[in-house]
Image (cartoon, rainbow over the protein chains, first blue to last red):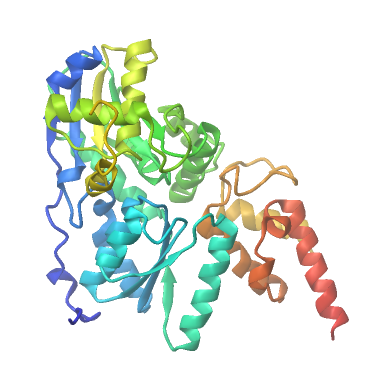
Length: 333
Length: 86
């Protein structure tokens, strides 16, 4: 088996279906939740390697990575990280070696996918951020000694945020019916990059709208701090200045769906996944989208969101991970 | 010359901007979201270059690097042991 050459023409790379992603009405799910209007932004249908919102940044990312002159991508992520899966695929199709440091066991779903795409896995179950970084440093030295040049891909960059901001412009141009109602965009949040990019996009492209970021693993205060840092880095603005305050004023963060932590299943997320499947034929997974929908379900039931808001649920992808979750039955089976 | 703490604070503020006010010296940088996981690599590389000291992998632990005051103490300790070894 042979790979592709690193110097292959970038234009020959195929990252699958490109945006805009479809915007679908979800009337039956809306009725189940008791909300007036619900749309689903189908980023699960764009990109490659299983798709998802993270695919929006690939074309820009590979250009920047190529400019570094590196031959090996190093990346870290969690057990069901969409970025791990997609970046391993990016490395494969663009001719780079890829090594993934995963804070989970060898048999974690993201490790399986990354390995399938040809990446070398460093499984560091129970690793802390500190031990993970020490391992990455050590590997960079080993690769350098072997004449390789590695680049560590950050989970978020200003260019990534720009790609996600453009997604909001895309949504604004998709012809939602005119409505005096406020729009509430609901998304799962992990690294905070998608949320930060969406806030930039709301500021540029979408008035009378807010963002609800449902945390997959971090407490609200930590996620808000991360989003602040990403926004300040991307804009160069004072993190406590007017510009960042204005951007953050449209953000709500919810950490009520985390359950036992990153990657743990919750009954609420499993029920939400089943509800989406049975009302709309939508597939979601239990770590990100499932928990985001679970939060939306709970908040629409208990009145924490205005049921008359126009709600756009952003399906960020991750569907391939549902298969591993289905190995254990959903609660309503 | 600026103090070590002032140089560390400038680095954190410029690379991980979360507040225009000073970060409390004892606040966890990682748990509070000020520094992300890959940011630890950035921090360690900066310490090595800025203070011309070698940071061993076993030094990359929260006891040494997870707050402004811990970073300052770590740099002082490493700098002192480096100069004693000369």
